[in-house]
Length: 475
Image (cartoon, rainbow, N blue to C red; front, side):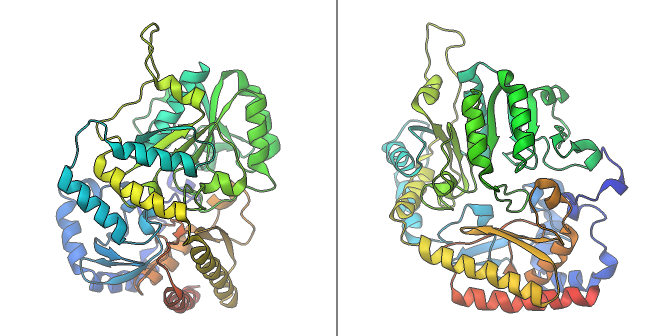
């Protein structure tokens, strides 16, 4: 590691389980109970870690003492390989919006597989899906498909550079935009690496990333408008774009305050900086038109993922026609285009799932009930935490939210980093062994689906009370 053990005040969502954040001596019993109910998961983990680093496909999936392995899902529930049932408030980190095993999506996938799994040649399904995206997302005139949020943001940033002819990009501190080299900066780090909170540094997040990329990356402090404006105007002549989420999801669920994003949009327009709104998480989740429709934003480019595929790996980026057409090859020039390609782009099976999901989103009938249940959940969790004597800051919008174990309001990313993530992990583990996956014990957002109902809430509130009671015993 590039930092000292005493610097681990920040409790990164991955490192929280790989470091001394977990004082196993205080809750060995919790792990023993977990181990008793998940023996098959333990067997899989012990075998898999010999041939797969850490026994998981993504570092996020690490869990101390080991992850549980899912077997199936239905509606608002999932079951692990040991037969344990969980109310699922993780929902594939946002990819599941309607619930697990939706008949319309399943049938569309099955029908397309019978026709053929993949061709790497265009199909009419791409036309249908494109029309739906352009109809639903207000700012998107034209769209291209990809396979993950990482791909979508990577291509959107390349397109912004190709259109503007400028090399630098700006991103917000704590903003997560996938795992390509250009955006793995200033997510989380010890404070001495992150710099002043009003002038954040591009703190590197991973080994293997060329340090020279820091010269092309400008960091803004989300929700500090004065500091953001100063940084953007100072670097405007070199900035191709600002990429930002409408809600910072990797910092919990950090909402824009006091018209922050509207003002940032104006600053970008005035300084010829393209605004890329990363709606990989918020797209379709905050309404048919996503966060931009809900918040009244007008980005130049938008990135989409998660819910767009109805559970299948689909992503997209789109925006203004004049920008998107930079992708089209012009043989009279060199380079002749801003490159976008991919064998699996608009994969027909994934497109079939996406069309089925997007048609349901367009109808929109499920949104009011889902948001009512969501509001009730977060209001109830807030009341339960207060009754138990805990200072918990609740932040939510639409069908997503987060609990910060903090004494003070969380306004900016640095506030989120100093919340008690270790306490959140303990609370989450107590809930997990009682059959409720409140986001993820590591600190992932609580994400609702249209399948959640009153019974799920009643069970979840009962479990939440028990969890806070357990925490109180350990204080």
